[in-house]
Length: 122
Image 1: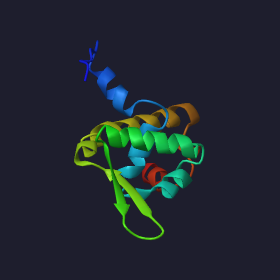
Image 2: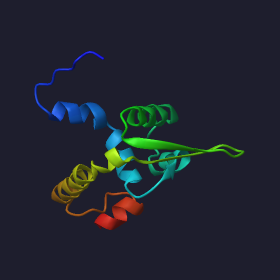
Image 3: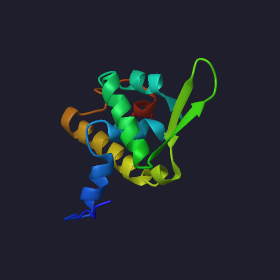
Image 4: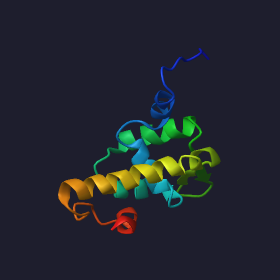
Protein backbone atom coordinates (compact mmCIF):
# COMPACT_ATOMS: atom_id res chain seq x y z
CA UNK A 1 0.00 0.00 0.00
CA UNK A 2 1.34 3.40 -0.98
CA UNK A 3 1.88 5.81 1.88
CA UNK A 4 -0.83 8.48 1.97
CA UNK A 5 -0.12 12.10 2.87
CA UNK A 6 -2.70 14.32 4.55
CA UNK A 7 -2.54 18.06 5.06
CA UNK A 8 -4.83 17.88 8.11
CA UNK A 9 -6.20 14.89 10.02
CA UNK A 10 -9.83 15.67 9.22
CA UNK A 11 -9.02 14.63 5.64
CA UNK A 12 -8.51 11.07 6.88
CA UNK A 13 -11.87 11.16 8.68
CA UNK A 14 -13.70 12.49 5.64
CA UNK A 15 -12.01 9.94 3.42
CA UNK A 16 -13.75 7.22 5.44
CA UNK A 17 -17.12 8.78 6.40
CA UNK A 18 -17.43 11.66 3.93
CA UNK A 19 -20.06 12.02 1.27
CA UNK A 20 -23.80 12.38 1.29
CA UNK A 21 -24.81 8.97 2.62
CA UNK A 22 -22.17 7.36 4.84
CA UNK A 23 -22.95 9.36 7.98
CA UNK A 24 -26.67 8.77 7.46
CA UNK A 25 -26.08 5.03 7.19
CA UNK A 26 -23.88 5.10 10.29
CA UNK A 27 -26.44 7.09 12.29
CA UNK A 28 -29.08 4.46 11.50
CA UNK A 29 -26.69 1.68 12.50
CA UNK A 30 -26.01 3.33 15.88
CA UNK A 31 -29.52 2.13 16.76
CA UNK A 32 -28.77 -1.50 16.02
CA UNK A 33 -28.42 -4.01 13.22
CA UNK A 34 -30.23 -3.26 9.99
CA UNK A 35 -30.96 -5.22 6.85
CA UNK A 36 -30.32 -3.57 3.50
CA UNK A 37 -34.08 -3.24 2.92
CA UNK A 38 -34.50 -1.47 6.28
CA UNK A 39 -31.77 1.02 5.42
CA UNK A 40 -33.34 1.62 2.01
CA UNK A 41 -36.72 2.28 3.65
CA UNK A 42 -35.11 4.71 6.12
CA UNK A 43 -33.32 6.51 3.26
CA UNK A 44 -35.81 6.56 0.38
CA UNK A 45 -33.73 8.99 -1.73
CA UNK A 46 -30.69 6.71 -1.96
CA UNK A 47 -30.49 4.33 -4.91
CA UNK A 48 -29.96 0.65 -4.29
CA UNK A 49 -26.67 0.81 -6.21
CA UNK A 50 -25.38 3.70 -4.07
CA UNK A 51 -26.49 2.03 -0.83
CA UNK A 52 -24.67 -1.17 -1.79
CA UNK A 53 -21.54 0.79 -2.75
CA UNK A 54 -21.50 2.79 0.48
CA UNK A 55 -22.02 -0.32 2.61
CA UNK A 56 -19.15 -2.08 0.84
CA UNK A 57 -16.82 0.88 1.36
CA UNK A 58 -17.71 1.13 5.05
CA UNK A 59 -17.13 -2.61 5.41
CA UNK A 60 -13.80 -2.39 3.58
CA UNK A 61 -12.71 0.37 5.98
CA UNK A 62 -13.66 -1.76 8.99
CA UNK A 63 -16.42 0.61 10.13
CA UNK A 64 -19.28 -1.87 9.78
CA UNK A 65 -19.68 -5.63 9.93
CA UNK A 66 -21.67 -7.56 7.34
CA UNK A 67 -23.38 -10.54 8.92
CA UNK A 68 -24.55 -13.26 6.55
CA UNK A 69 -27.01 -15.83 7.89
CA UNK A 70 -26.86 -19.26 6.25
CA UNK A 71 -30.54 -19.67 5.42
CA UNK A 72 -32.92 -19.62 2.49
CA UNK A 73 -33.72 -16.98 1.46
CA UNK A 74 -30.36 -15.42 2.36
CA UNK A 75 -30.38 -12.88 5.16
CA UNK A 76 -27.74 -10.17 5.54
CA UNK A 77 -27.52 -7.59 8.32
CA UNK A 78 -25.15 -4.72 8.95
CA UNK A 79 -23.93 -3.42 12.28
CA UNK A 80 -21.27 -1.03 13.52
CA UNK A 81 -17.98 -2.75 14.20
CA UNK A 82 -16.11 -2.07 17.42
CA UNK A 83 -13.98 0.39 15.44
CA UNK A 84 -17.12 1.94 13.94
CA UNK A 85 -18.56 2.48 17.41
CA UNK A 86 -15.64 4.82 18.08
CA UNK A 87 -17.43 7.26 15.73
CA UNK A 88 -20.40 7.55 18.11
CA UNK A 89 -19.31 10.92 19.52
CA UNK A 90 -18.78 12.39 16.06
CA UNK A 91 -22.15 11.13 14.85
CA UNK A 92 -23.95 12.44 17.95
CA UNK A 93 -22.30 15.84 17.47
CA UNK A 94 -23.31 15.95 13.79
CA UNK A 95 -26.93 15.10 14.68
CA UNK A 96 -27.05 17.72 17.44
CA UNK A 97 -25.52 20.40 15.21
CA UNK A 98 -27.99 19.53 12.44
CA UNK A 99 -30.95 19.81 14.82
CA UNK A 100 -29.71 23.19 16.04
CA UNK A 101 -29.21 24.36 12.46
CA UNK A 102 -32.71 23.26 11.43
CA UNK A 103 -34.19 25.05 14.44
CA UNK A 104 -32.19 28.19 13.62
CA UNK A 105 -33.31 28.21 9.98
CA UNK A 106 -36.90 26.89 10.28
CA UNK A 107 -37.79 27.73 13.88
CA UNK A 108 -38.39 24.13 14.94
CA UNK A 109 -37.78 20.54 13.89
CA UNK A 110 -41.09 20.05 12.06
CA UNK A 111 -39.28 19.74 8.70
CA UNK A 112 -37.78 16.40 9.80
CA UNK A 113 -39.47 13.25 8.52
CA UNK A 114 -41.02 11.11 11.20
CA UNK A 115 -38.75 8.18 11.96
CA UNK A 116 -37.02 6.61 14.93
CA UNK A 117 -33.94 8.85 14.85
CA UNK A 118 -35.80 12.11 14.46
CA UNK A 119 -38.34 11.32 17.18
CA UNK A 120 -35.48 11.39 19.69
CA UNK A 121 -34.54 14.93 18.61
CA UNK A 122 -38.05 16.41 18.76
